[in-house]
Length: 197
Image 1 (cartoon, rainbow, N blue to C red):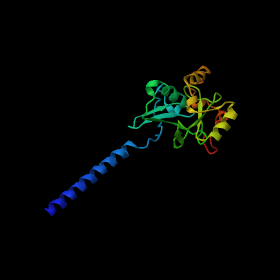
Image 2: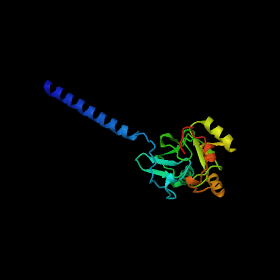
Image 3: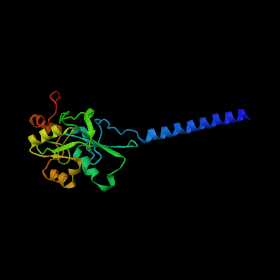
Image 4: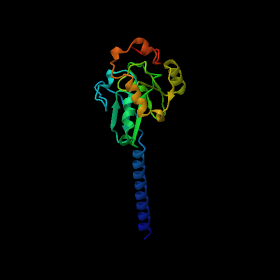
């Protein structure tokens, strides 16, 4: 009788341990970190279908928990998409380039940052892809310095509205290939001194 009780207790302990481990595995999967992905030469903008790498300026991407990724030729295109009520997906996290650490001509995917915590400056003097050129920064000080150079103001994600994006489109800034970007315009973008043109 004692042997059967011991075996039963051991079996119950094993089953309890197995169920706890299974629970841990499910929880780990739920909290999987959402991280940005590289933008490849052939990637097309989710909104306009243009080849993303053909244009200068900060790019954007929306990454979902389940792995779906939408890439955009500019942060303005990404925000235009995101401002549509049906696209405010709770599972999607948006990323933009930190232009304090990237060349305006060819932003570095190593420096993609969380769009919800970034600082933004409208940069009408710089060429971009679709929409108003928006320079994004991880640090407020870098954004403020850039805003002084551009004669603009520092914005946060909640300041970016459809009206702001439409103003940029009315300025006539849209789909200017990299070859039309001048060196002086790129120099004003606040990219690091070691960037290649």
